[in-house]
Image (tube, rainbow, N blue to C red; front, top):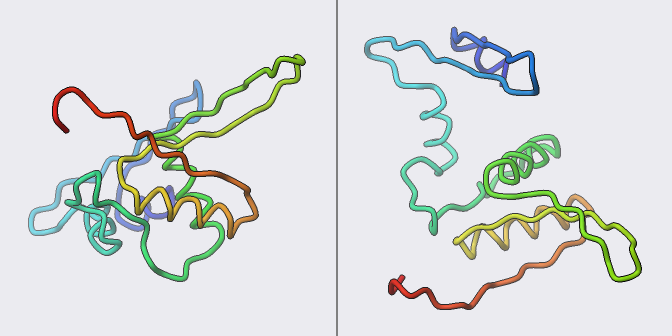
Amino acid sequence: MRLFAAEHGCRVREIPQGSIVRVRFPFRAGHRNPITDCLRRFGVWGQRCDEKQLPDLRLSREFWIGCLSGLIDTDGCVRERVNPRGTAHGSVEFATVSPVLAMQVSDTLLRLGVANRVWVDERKRNDGH
């Protein structure tokens, strides 16, 4: 991200407490935001949450690891669970309303050698959605 920002004349500010990196894209009349253009190229920009999916492109292992990391950072969590015998187990969870994205994330994890399972919550919501 730092390289992408530098290529587009952006300021990068790192917060010393933690791992937050803020990137500010300058407004330039007649130019689009480079992040928006990148998201448009990958078909993500302007999609409803239930329509989102991963790009169908041959991309590097590093790209897919970064992509999964971003998805987990935004819509996932890391948990530690203790079974009845007292053994701690870690798990990583990711939630989405897009069935296509869920299956693509599962497939990507399998290609990276990570066993996983997809669980569908069939509970009905009371508000009709």
